[in-house]
Image 1 (cartoon, rainbow, N blue to C red):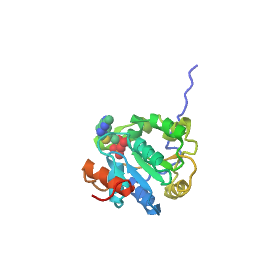
Image 2 (cartoon, helix red, strand yellow):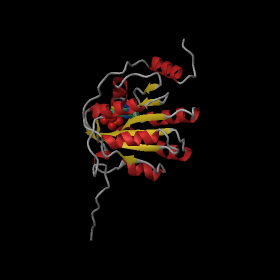
Image 3 (cartoon, helix red, strand yellow):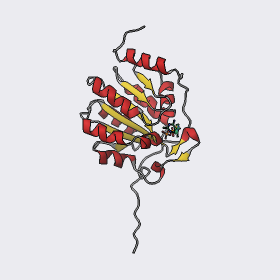
Image 4 (cartoon, helix red, strand yellow):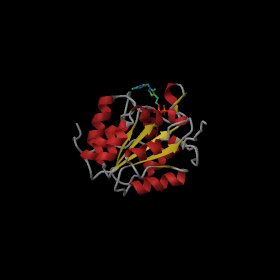
Length: 206
Ligand SMILES: Cc1ncc(C[n+]2csc(CCOP(=O)(O)OP(=O)(O)O)c2C)c(N)n1
């Protein structure tokens, strides 16, 4: 006899939200010098559109590097809170970083996944997160036990507020719509890096 199982996917109890709105909510909660790392494409476009800050880094070109870069920042500057924004497709390409982050356990790092279930920027091909892979279950399985889906915008706000005083790294996932990014980040890698290093206080103004 064959049995069928239903995967515990993201869509069960979560509202479909909007990436720019959630990114703006995150930025509005930042009171101090928190670092924010945006991933390739839409996450960094919306981070830029939400209002540039000197402590923002905008990844260009390579999928899945927002979380590893943010891990490096969190380890190097343990007194600073660090947030990272990534698309579901990008995280799926670099999922091993979740195990590394859980093992190293920087208490100042929060990972945010904007899950639209598609590789939107390259033509909206479906990702495995759309049907079979529950990113929060993966994060918890990797050891990021406090990870959770944001049920709606108010829940997202609450999860960000909690993250600002967290003592363990965690992942927050949000189910989002397919609206394109709200802005276009200037694509100058050297400028992005230099500006970020000045913003983190590890380099003085040229
Ligand atoms: C290693 C790598 N593979 C493929 C690409 C091409 N590519 C750029 S963005 C993207 C889709 C990103 O999807 P996701 O992270 O879910 O973000 P979304 O576009 O949905 O906001 C792809 C396939 C790339 N830039 N790098």
